[in-house]
Length: 75
Image (tube, rainbow, N blue to C red; front, side):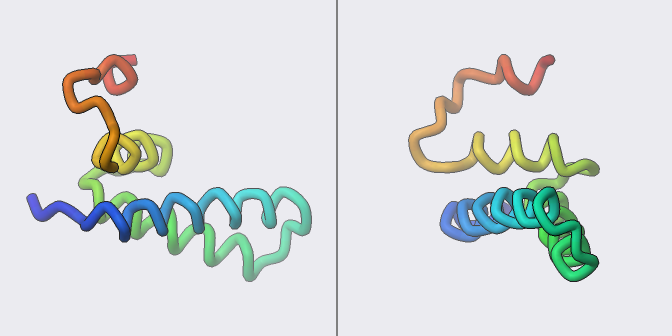
């Protein structure tokens, strides 16, 4: 499987978190569509099928993540 560059993953995580806040505050269809697009890209970039797993996997791939600690993934 191809691995996304950590900078790309960090950017996608940040975008998703900002859009989640915007959607919670305004609930606009544009924010929701963009959030869905970023969630899809995260899933494709991490080889996962849902955004929660994608966020965990993306964070796990970032520099400074503890590669030996997969306790989050086993829950």
